[in-house]
Image (cartoon, rainbow, N blue to C red; front, side):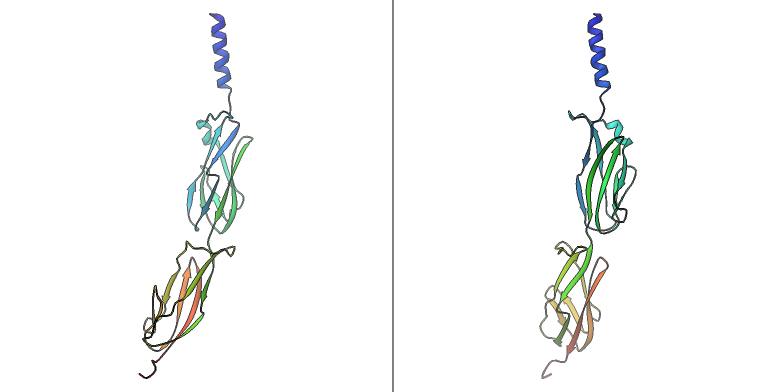
Length: 192
């Protein structure tokens, strides 16, 4: 009986002595699509056999490699603050885990043509608008705002710029603080 008690005590002691051997970071990477977004990260302390140490999760400390891109609070909530890439690091004693973060913002708008001369009440003319991120990569998931500054001269639809009455104005294209303009001149219709 004594021997069984000793074996049981040793087995319990071995289980009690287990400690985390690594941190499992969730997620391993994330792309924010703008400034002011936020997301929770988890760093789960685990043994090599996959046992989780949930009670120690609250002891994890957090930091980012670039506070101009993303910041993280003491419980793993990451906030996007500017364009770029950063690394979120979770630490528990000697254990560390990292995740990659990228914040993608609009860096530039390209609009063609840059000038249009149209005939009053004529056919609409299309604009080609391309949105680029801070690294010059095309963003197909961003919808810019397009408006004619003087709707007595032109109007905007999905077909393009509709000339209304003679005059000059600009079509303003904007997205996430970036702006481009197209100069619009509407001339009287010929023969009218």
